[in-house]
Amino acid sequence: MKDNRQLWSHFPSAIAQAIRRSANDAAHRLAKRPLSWRRQDRPVPYPRLLESYPFDQGISGTTPAVQSLVDEPDPVHDQVSWFENLRVRKEKVTRLHFYFHDILSGKKPTAMRVAQATVTDKSPTFFGMIMMADDPLTEGPEPTSKLLGRAQGLYGSASQGELGLIMAMNYGFTDGKYNGSSLSILGRNSAMHPLREMPIVGGTGVFRLARGSAFAKTHWFDPASGDAIVEYNVTVIHY
Image 1 (tube, rainbow, N blue to C red):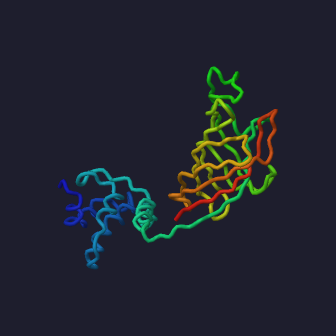
Image 2: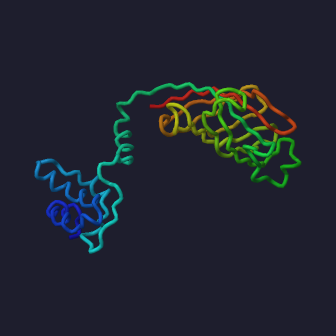
Image 3: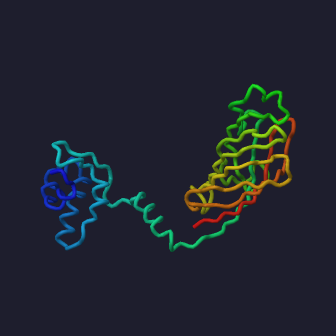
């Protein structure tokens, strides 16, 4: 039988019997669900059931490998539902304040050079330099302050006239209600200016479909090592 949906509709009991309960209890219970739904005159959610069931075309002689598919949350379905209900969701405005520690010196630097151009060492702005960062985000300016998350990504010198960095960074949060959520920043950071504005182009978790602005101000900078602590004030619009 080529149509999986037709197979489930007409032969749910045969499928249940074809799967040995002792070999795979989860698959057995899953196979019996359409039969119980039909007895109760309940509609069978074919698309979701077929997405989760391992049958390809018809019944195979080999016991399918099903791993804890019954009675577990369906993250894919939850995400689809979230977007389907987007039109009735209200936008929220969230403001965040934290400190970004970009440390190039010492035994455990949080950012390091991974590439450069042939002219980088001769350039007053380090033009062509690319840095990879895994910088801590803290509640206060002290390195020992409470850790709120990490900024991970790339930044590089993209200007020959001044120290202008192009930032492609993911700011992932690990504390409180924002744990597991992140913001993405992609834009120009004129590092020597007193105040810089960079766009927030997206986010995940609590900040799904985020947009907004991040304002950065240098709190401390060591010209000899390049180490810096930067204060961030972020305004985010999200759902």
